[in-house]
Length: 419
Image 1 (cartoon, rainbow, N blue to C red):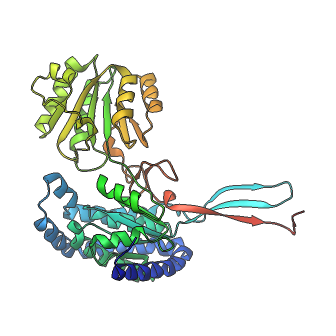
Image 2 (image 1 turned 90 degrees about the horizontal axis):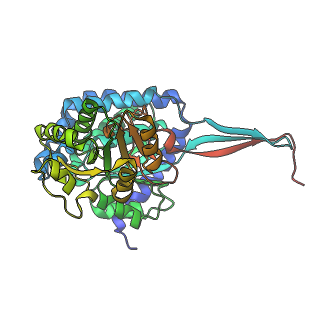
Image 3 (image 1 turned 60 degrees about the vertical axis):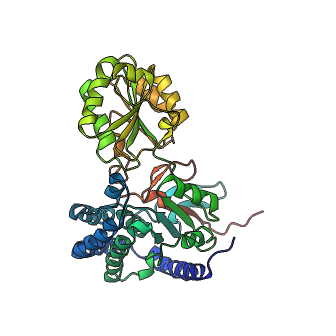
């Protein structure tokens, strides 16, 4: 495959610089890495006005939906949340040097499996500017360097945030190249990153279906990816009605544009006649629209009929698909047919039903009596997340510090030679 020479040349230099910086970073004591994170947080707060001004340029140029614009928007509270996220990562235990396993062989050789950085991470993301700060924090703490390529819609915000992060690195005496931002939003730079075997050790895409599919199809570098956030909430026959109403409203409408937002409501036929109406009324009051199957429309007649693709659609907006199911097995079957193994929840007071549901789904995250919007690295206690992994290799669910390490072996002998 032919790549633009200018972009390939830049990436080669950026990756070379990142590799050299990584040798410094991975050997830096935890205290220095933590000091850099806290300095980054200080710089973000100091530069908040400039960051918000850059974000205002991105917002003014956007013609996207309100949900997409919400993903793009920075506010003083969101800048502060970025800064706090950096500090929370600094407060977490050091993921490097952990002894993951150790054993001694009959010949006296002692083995240790030790957590180490992956290396140079390539992060390709869309719209949400805070992703750059979260990814930088997690990579820095775990001893990885990162090359960030955000979407064109958030380019001004990404550059302003990176300026603050690099200032924090300098304050702690770490190389600027620990965190780099692509110099262009040209799609050819993405192609250069995807073809960067030997330069980049792992690509992490975070964005819509088309971005993830492109990365998976074209990458010549290992990929840690997530599928669509086709998340479901199943209201079981033994659900507490008030709890179900509160959870469903939050799971859908807290933030409709995040990948952990519930896209489909499944409700048990046994309680649908009494509970579906109030749930719909709650959601409508919050501005939600619906696409419903025939059984749901028989109970709430003015719901819009669902077509053949609605139950496979990640709305990322104030729209919810609705289906009536007969019990746990049918709910699990619906999720298997339409889900993306991201995040799925059951609301019930029946522990046996919850166990059957959670064992039946293959989702990277399963919840019982909680909103799907808790699928978030911060809520898991990871400080932040670099994405939600839905594949089956290396990591699943929110990807935090531990998931950004690999391992090597240390072997200690006392003169053994192999016969």
